[in-house]
Image 1 (cartoon, rainbow, N blue to C red):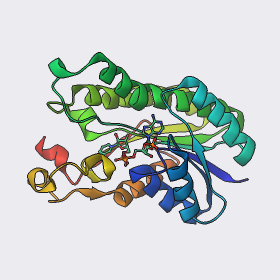
Image 2 (image 1 turned 180 degrees about the vertical axis):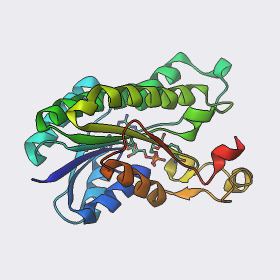
Image 3 (image 1 turned 180 degrees about the horizontal axis):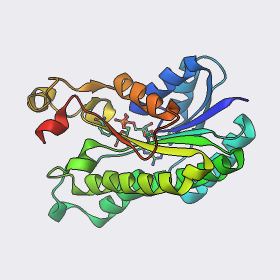
Image 4 (image 1 turned 60 degrees about the horizontal axis):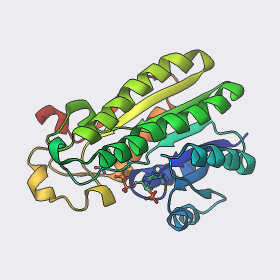
Length: 238
Ligand code: NDP
């Protein structure tokens, strides 16, 4: 049977790098993002018969329809990676608009809850599956100016651990990757010179370095409820 994996946020950055690691390993991939054209370009760059889907993870109906469509075209989803996320420019809580809070929580936290719920239904029927949610070191350590983002990513850890307990008997594993600063569109406005002095390994990470850790968790049969930090040692200094 095909090893089918849905990668939300698979069109760019960390999610796209995960797809680049998984494609040569024989997985059939669904790359999901809001911008279908970018997702299609990423899927066709992989070669093979991987597919692209447009979906806003913050919208319940979008997520439901996307899972129906993915399963119709690819078969049951056995693997799920939640890398869709946003991080609006840093702002102190007192200056953060409520709409901005809701938007970040809906995309980063509710979005992963919705995709996990849809995937777990299928995985229970299939009697197995594996999920990796992409959190952040900021969700574990906090950071001034990022309280809402930190809450969304910290919430994802609690959610993932609880879900791991809930579905372990069904042979479904749920883990979290917590990256530090990684070179992607999300961090391109940051001055690396300024931040790298706090990173023991002395540089930002590459998306592919996170991707290898994501795939390690996805494929490790005896790891569940784990948070794997991939941050060049940044947490040691936070
Ligand atoms: P990018 O901005 O490079 O990519 C984000 C991806 O998520 C894109 O594919 C984007 O596609 C998709 N996306 C964003 N919002 C939605 C949405 N509402 N519905 C569906 N897809 C969406 O970010 P990164 O690769 O850097 O980030 C990936 C994850 O890693 C995020 O959760 C981020 O918080 C986390 N992370 C990143 C770090 C970093 O330093 N880069 C550090 C720690 C954590 P589209 O815009 O077309 O929807």
